[in-house]
Image 1: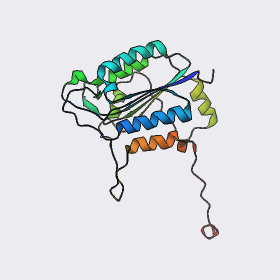
Image 2: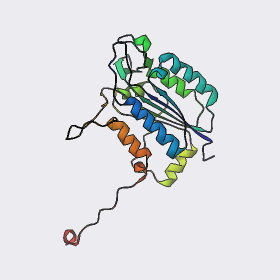
Image 3: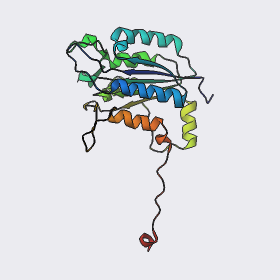
Image 4: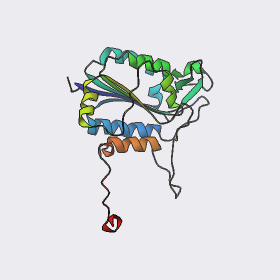
Length: 225
């Protein structure tokens, strides 16, 4: 078995935070653009949740639905763009994703990364990829009970085939467990981009840049003398 029957993605973007939590400027644009690329270029069935759709109750209901709908021959992708936070825990940083209806300082209104990991670990899919674009996203490392695969810089075809055939569990984060993630970026002229720098790089990769090797450098005759 080397191919997947379905490509499924959950894509979440939250700008409209309230209850004392500062709003973001690019998360919904990031999620919308990434969802489009996944559907148009990678044949994913995408469920896009923006702002109020990404409440804590809705996310919990979503996890319950996924356990009933995701199958063993599926490839599943989970993307979250929004606020994140890490608090001190007994075994390391305790990470949380911040739903749209969260209340500042009320941890019970946050989504623990441990809860996210538990929900996703129950899925029977053969390949899973989580992409977290939020502050302190690297804290997910302390929530995971599975061995996270380190992906080499160069993947030869034989290794790529094995990645497809064997079960795989991978996570990409925009920041470490003690780092903030940039929401916007401006150039030398002060012009602000409509996407986070991480999302821009991800969109370039989804559009094909990740599939291209650097062009060979041609040495001049002068350099060879």
